[in-house]
Image (cartoon, rainbow over all chains, first blue to last red; front, side):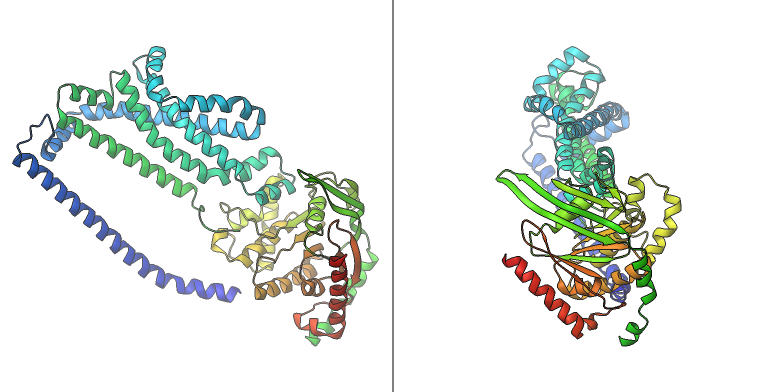
Length: 278
Length: 274
């Protein structure tokens, strides 16, 4: 048997490298293709705007958006407000995710907590966050705190639900394994349940990071002095649609980066996920 | 094959007999599960005594309570009636005196093979340092030397099951219980693993309870074979297998072992019919 496995291992590298080479080529070709279509779209867009003489306050040309983005970035205004929004998102995400994780663990390990808290959790979740935002402003002011709490509330639910689902889905053989080794409930949680639940928890975190961006912008729309949301409102009021579009580009770039970062962390932490080992 | 039989460790078996002491003793064991559709009697009046160093197989039809017996011995389930003791210590809950191999390897995918094998040490809060060398030796014994830093998903099913056997042995328990450990493997791997298990048994001298569906595996491996009946599980018959070790699968064709296998089959058929 060991002979067979050694043989298959020695064969693997050769086929492995040629495979990755071809997939790399395919991938870069796909990316080039996508970039080409994007440039074509931008050109058509630009051409249509100048051909039909669409005024900038109705629909901005790509060149105007790029100029607004460049100006905002160079002047440092965008970066300053982006930093504020980013702090709101990251702090709120950390707070909400941690709360969701701890509550989830609590609800799985202490049945009373599950029965008592779950209705409230669902009740809070079913209320749209926009409806709670004015309350947050009243209680915590126009500063950064109210936005952090908005983000935290948005992030908590998906993490909580996924933590509970993940902990409950732990393979019964794994539980029996650690119990048979005289493992305490706390050890079962630490050695088996929490690691087993990690892919679930990361699914929750991936949802949460997207909701965090929405939560922060909604909070800033309702009442704030600083942040990307405030800049969008200001640009909108003065019908500076090029700046609105530039800010949207900035916002979605940030969302994409956050999402990719989450995925990268997940890949590192749950490197074993999806690989069969039973 | 005959040469191997000639150097059978007769001295060893004599030593076992003189040391005769019950590593596992169950008396009048009964287990009743309460389910939504009423009570299910899984075991009734099971009395088994297994001496130190003995290899005993438990065979029986599906639903004969073999897995229930395993849970009781591992302390994962409390008996409704009767007592269990390992080396004279009554079993009241999970115990460090027994190691267990399940049907599936149940390795934790986020731990390396070495870390998986040392899991009992971590859970029992024993000193990792002092056991690591022993764990490495055991891994070598089952042919997993050099795979310590690999992850379970990098190993074949048979290799994973070997690692799980090492995990069951690493804290040096008096008793090793195996619940159809080769059920998930293909036929050739099964035989290879059985040969390997025989070697582990001979080299470590561990007392082993081996739960299986396979008569040939039981005959090949055991000193004694216990046949159980279907629900409620009872002990129907016990067969001794004095054939010397090491045995090979070719030996199964010998008249003695052939007769033994036939006797067990007949007894099993009886147990299934009743």
